[in-house]
Image (cartoon, helix red, strand yellow):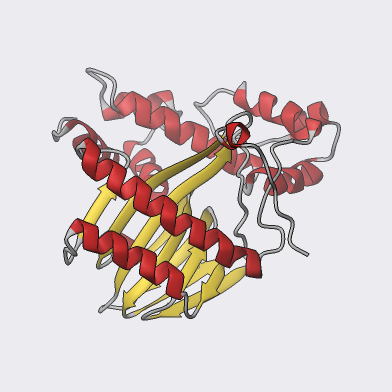
Length: 290
């Protein structure tokens, strides 16, 4: 039986829906064959070609005309040389505790989704059906009309997607309420310094009153990622902010995050953000400054 959450509209306002990426066209050269770790949900429609995706516990593939829905986390993706794809990258989470509101793990492959295809075609037609198009929440400027068009089109698509996911994912929705043990561990992690990886979660598990292994399981249930991944995303957010600070130098940001080797910082940032620190700052600030 489906578990469907019903709330008043004022309560649904506490559920944040953030579109990060909408694009159509061939995969980027960096994303065509890559190992990535990503903190957003991903939906791909293969318009042409094919793709294979390997995740820790799942192997998925899709051909032209098919859909893949992927959870946040680590994966290996390999697109065919002729691939063209429509991409939605997004987050859906509760404002009070950042807990994901929808769980599409371990991922889903759908061969035909007529309603989703129709929603994408409608959005494409409003954009003038360009052969390639990119909308991004960071770095690419749009006027309010275009932004509302993309956001509105995405929400129409998402409403159809949720109906489809419910047919295949009985535990799709997460309640706002959070296990108090996870809350205690989360507060501990947030208080950890960002200048080094979170190697030992033992003290956080002790705060929560559980074993480290059980804490990892609780985090996966609540946040769809491990405590280590959660801390990595904190470090990435800090890096983003520092890279855009006036007068900031990439080497200095690397040092503040505990990297003594600039190349290791760049590799770490590229794996998580899909671009180098220099490229990220150039996109955000419109320059190539160091």
